[in-house]
Image (cartoon, rainbow, N blue to C red; front, side, top):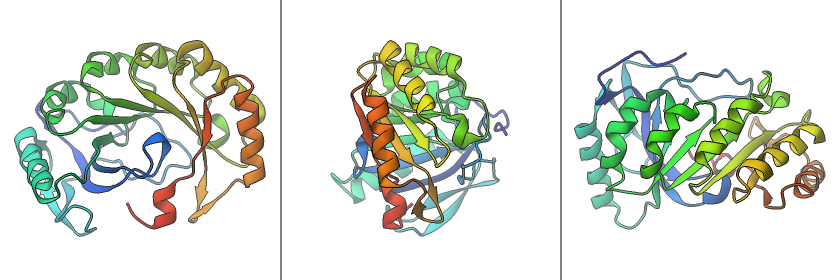
Length: 253
């Protein structure tokens, strides 16, 4: 459910923590993750809490896994003070700041105020479900990288929003980015062909990342099946990679 309306300078956050990026082209890079509340989708495989809460959980020390509660909504000065302290305490560690959710673009007005200040600290990496192109457009000058999910029906349990994904890519394509498709045992070659064709037509510079569904800590698609899906995509859109959720394999956030 969407987060309740707040001041355009105060945001409802779920958590702020430091970890490696476990997915896509930035895999292995250390990032600060700022998770915003609320989502406009309800994907069957999602195991990320995104409902608004009274408190935001903030790591005591970057990467410690020990958290303290910070009352919501969180003001920009409060967040900046926290992040500046982390950067002083762990110099050179963090590659970028990941804005994630839920769906961060539900907070478009908030991010319009926050991003110019956050971008002074670290390059900004947006993780999004690719369904809110109008909210994305004014934020593009502040974003260093966009990671967009292609929501395939075979894993989400809902029809793939191909038309809105196309509009999103048309807005985003001049920024560095990637399109990531979670694939499961029921993902058909036709879905992958459609995803590859969409990228070839709208954002040919963006790679397609095939990410196997993780169930109970294990990859739910065999290596052979992933190779076949990669071959299917590459016939249409050659820049395609198979990358699992590595943070799950390492047991980190």
